[in-house]
Structures are given as C-alpha cells and as structure tokens.
Length: 254
Image (tube, rainbow, N blue to C red; front, side, top):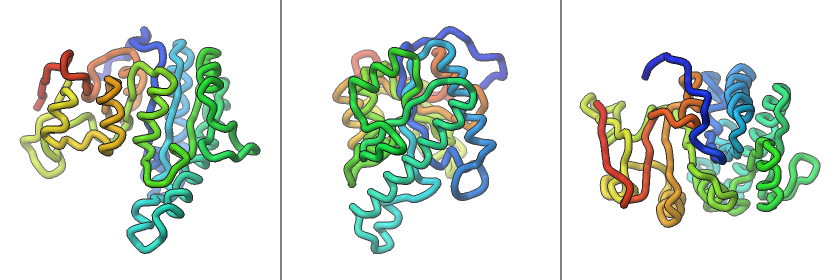
C-alpha cells in the first residue's frame, strides 16, 4: 500500500463502520488507550467533515468478552449482557474523543440507559445522520447470543448504509491464514458465494448471511495504518471488498 495522501472525494454518502473494542486498547492489553482513541477520533472527525454520514458500531472486547467468559462457566446470557455494557463504555468514550474535535456525536444504546445515551430509535438515528452528526450504536442488538458483527449488519441495513466497513488488524481477506502460510493470497474482491464456499471467515455467520441476503457490500481492511479509514470511504482499493454474486469477480494479490 502506498503512502500517498488519500483522496478527499467520498465514494459513499452513508456508511457504517464496525470498530472492534480491541482496536481501542492499542498495545496495553486491556481497556482504552487515550492515544489510540484520540487517533481514531481524528480520522473519524475528518471523514465526517467530508460530508459523509457516519455511523459506528463498537465492540467491547477490550473490556469484557461475553463468549469467552461463558466458556469459563458464566451463564451465556449474563455474560453477553455484561459485554453489551462494555460496548456502551467504549461508545461514550469514543463520543467524548470525537466531540473534543468539534464534531457533534450521538450515542444510541439498544439497552435503555437514559443518563448515558439515547435509546436506539431508527428514525432518530437517520435524522442525526442527515444533520451530519456521527452516530455510535452501543449495546449490540440488545439481545444475548448475537455478536457486534451482527449488530453492525443489522444497523447498516436499518439506516440504509451503502457499505459496511469492517475495521480489523489485518489488511483484508486471505485464502488461508497469512500468519501460518507464507503463500497466503489476499483477495481484492470476492463474492459472497466464494467467501462461503471457501469458509473465509469474514465475520460471524449470522452477520454474513444478513449482508448477503440484503446485498450489502462489506469492505474488510486494516485500520492500524493511519488514513486507511478515509481511503476506504473515498473508494481507494484498500483491503477486500465482498460483493453480491452477479457483480462480483474475484481477484487475488500475493
């Protein structure tokens, strides 16, 4: 990937960014890194200033992972609810970081907690976006047994996002694990059918099925490289694009 300055012309009007909780902790292993959340907020504020309507679903894995705790004996539903609370902590922290940069932001929670966030109301969320406010969705779907990937797919379709941007620590989708195989190839573009056939593990099955059935494109990209979020929003060929079958042709890069 080059180091040229990213384009400043957005390719999308409305996007949903799925941001993992782990992305907020940097190298400290737990919690929220003030430096990292500040850097992310700067990128998000810059995107909002381009006129892009930006919605975000944030995970909670930097604070609490419901699935891993349930494997240790905790009731799965209880563990998932605690995980949802962790996502709200991240959402409020991200809101604060973005608003310190002068961009109006709203947090909506799928679990009512009126002193911290608005309740999730679809029409209100869309109105905020139309007014160019960044909207952060917390508490997942509000239901146990569903991941924040599923919440991201669901919210993206509810608000009419043109694409779901899945920010990760890898630079796209590979035909095999690049950490274990030197000959792993990265796809520039792949169809839903190919991704399923090859079990590429783009996101959890429920989220992937929601995107496939509603023909919502997904871009998987590395957010650890500064400027990548903006590059993706401006249509640069960063990461891997998953598209519906009748449009998709598959390309691979070594």
